[in-house]
Each structure stands twice: as structure tokens, then as C-alpha cells.
Length: 294
Image 1 (cartoon, rainbow, N blue to C red):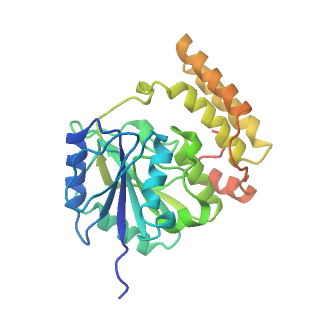
Image 2 (tube, rainbow, N blue to C red):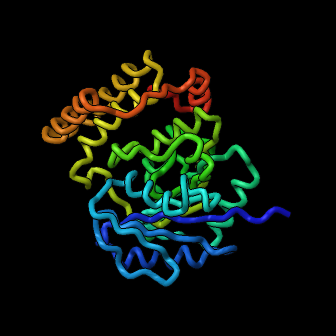
């Protein structure tokens, strides 16, 4: 019999939630099977006290979510290659069950083309999963597992072979849409992504707009995402649809101003290397229920 897959975990922290971080680390330590190796990255801040055996990296400045996670990946060797699978977990989350790591090992072992697994996020008090946390258009039933086209950044597992093949998260994004950028590159390389309702991270219900940079980053990174990954004819379609959706949601005046500022910045600033996906990947995304124009 082959040995079980080695699992690691990357957690980034701003150092401002020490109790939640400790609870998360305890939940990782309680996972069934071989121990999960853990790296906590202090993203521009000291790392609070952590249990023995947990490795830490303290960065002198905040590199953003993808930048901090990429540092955590490299702590497991080039492209995370010292382990087979990496869990990425928000520092105020909590693994709800003891078998999540084992479910991940089994999922990746059973399906060699499975590259990424997106967990279900549930409020610890109510058990409710917000619609935005189900990474597909038909999100009314969060208990239905399925193949998907993107994943949730703070509650997922990634096969490190994917990172070695298609590259890490895009550092420059700082916050927002970095997961979709990686997901599209992985899908274009032939990997699969699953949403699994039985792999649960407890996380308090929040609104993404709580972040001061939300509207600017969402708009800028949406443009970068399209410029980097979409065939040229789809770029204006994708961005036009998202502009209409944004206007339909009737944001406040300041939010709309920030959004259009970010949209303009997305066109006038470098977005990194352009590697448009194949048209067969566009068709594949469409068959999975989310064509890359929305």
C-alpha cells in the first residue's frame, strides 16, 4: 500500500486574533491520521504564542493575503513540495470536525486529477452557510457537493503539484480574486476543483465590504483577472457584465467612486504575465455552469 498523503497547513495572521488562532491550531492538531504540519505567517506583525511544533514566519510588512500565503507555501519547500496537500485556513476559522484532513487525503488519492477542494464555511452559532460562500452560481443548496470553477481562499486544500505546475497565487492582487486567478490557471492545465459540503470550516458570518480597500481591490483585480487569463474577445464581455452587476447592486456614492477608481487602475497598471486560457477551457467552464463572462 502507498503511504498516505502528507498534509500541511498555511495560516496567515495579523496578530490581532490570538484566541481564535489558538482555537484553530487546536482544531488542526486534533485531526485524525498523521499529524498536519503547520506554518503560521505573521503578515507584517509578530505571531502570537503558538503550540510547540508549529512553525512561524514573521514578515516585516503586510504582503496581502496572496503574498502572505505564498510565503507559507515556500516554508514547505519550493512550491510546497515537502508535502502533498496544503490546507489554507483563515486565522479566525475553526475546523468543525476531526476527519477533515483524512477526507482530504482520501479525495486527492481517489482522484489523481483533483487539484483543489473548497470547504463549506458555516457560522459556528447558526450553522448557516452564506450564499457567497458557495462557489457556484446555483448556490441555494450549500449541502450539495459538486464540481466548481473557483474556491474559497480561507477554507480550502490544494494539491502542491498544482502550485508547482501553474505557479502560486498572484502576489500583486493583495486582496480579492486571487483564488479565481489560480483556479482558472489550474483548470486550464487540466486539474479539477470540487466543493465539498462535508469538509467544514466554522467562521463567523461577515460582510466582505468590512475591508476598507474592498471596492477598489475588487474592481482593480477583476480587470487584472480578465487581462491575465481570458481570451481577448471575452475580456470586454466579462468586464461589461460585472460593471452592470455592480451598478444593479446600487452601491453608495463613495463605494461606487472607489470601484471606478479601481476599475481604471486595473487598466492602467501592470497585471503580470498574460496567459489566456484555451477555448476548450472556456467551454469546460461553461459546461460546469459558470462561463467566464460572469
